[in-house]
Picture 1 (cartoon, helix red, strand yellow):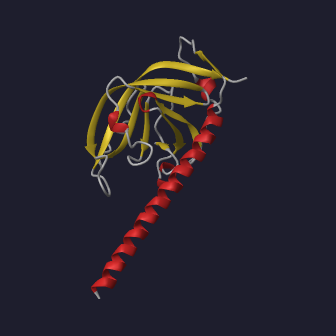
Picture 2 (tube, one colour; picture 1 turned 180 degrees about the vertical axis):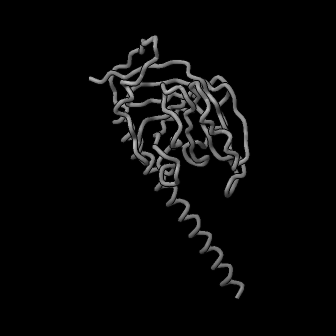
Picture 3 (cartoon, one colour; picture 1 turned 180 degrees about the horizontal axis):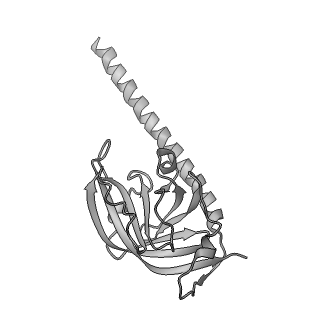
Length: 205
């Protein structure tokens, strides 16, 4: 009897490992597909410094109206040598494909909070290695925008104060679950805030 119980446990363990491996494979495949789409969205045109003293990007954003689940850009993290697709929305389907843009928050140049979220065990597995002074680069179809990290902190998982619609200056907030090696639903969130340091617009030929 004990022999069969042992075999049952071993079989169950192998099934769990196999399922986890399949899920990881599927996630990687979805992210790679989304990244290829993102590269098309961003384009490969020449980049020029945008010189508009009034800071009016209305014309650039006039045709930018992504729907839920649309791939909208790329988040590059030079220190981690990472290029991650940005997907509109933060439901599980979107987060399985890349970094999610929280609906209702701003896009680069809109002068409000931009909130990006991702899973700690996929796109943001090495996020804890970043330090104050490191750079995020958000590449959109209408331009490339750099943000420098100026603070990191930890909040409870249900703390919604990190989403602030009253902010009237450009702020990039990046969020993931914490602790990074926690098994199961993590009880906290790791937050990085970054300010804009450079703005470029893309000119496609």
